Length: 157
Image (tube, rainbow, N blue to C red; front, side, top):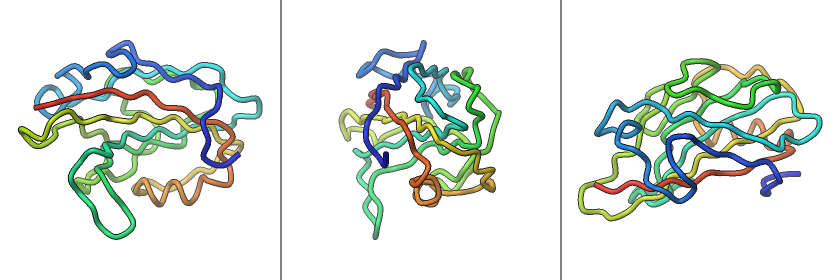
């Protein structure tokens, strides 16, 4: 399938699609990941990956743009939700060079940023090592993506 939207849907009890992400889930609050839930999982799904990326961040470097806030993978195909502040599964490296979730915290006065929470359904359990960047993860999972969709939230300081 490659990287194309599917019928899978992603939502959060913390915020509506295109809505403001609560302070609790930001760098100005408790900095905990929001609860996520997905439906319409493609037949044949063996595992999932979740990513949070801010394309509005004023950062550009060779081969990348924006700011990656969360990389989570090796999520079993039987799982269709993540609780708030999940500590389960395998974490990758965010753009602060730390493992785990790092909530929104755009530069003050930079305007509204949009945070894309992605869920990707894979046709295989890959058992990937911890500490992958978003780009490393995407390179490894691309041949196995059978469905994906996103939930966009916003935040401004």
